[in-house]
Image 1: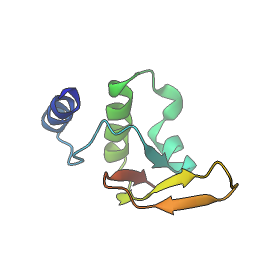
Image 2: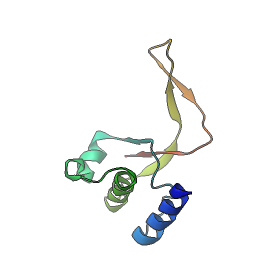
Image 3: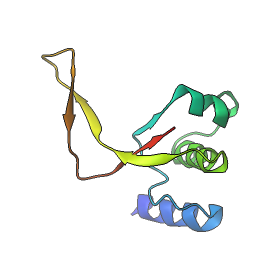
Image 4: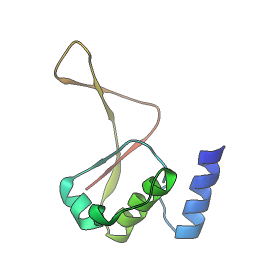
Length: 91
């Protein structure tokens, strides 16, 4: 319930189109983090996630839904797995 409310508030208050601004798992390229000014971020928790989302949108970074990477305990190589929940990738 908190996540639903937080996402609705973020979309309305910040005028962003990303429906899950508080997603805990995101993939960013290093170039995207530099462009967003990661060194200047001081927010924490849900605010941190929304802050990075807003910075990505403000910097016109491309984003897309991608699959999660699951690491197997028995192997050094990643194993791709389809998930029912969307993950966001920013570039």
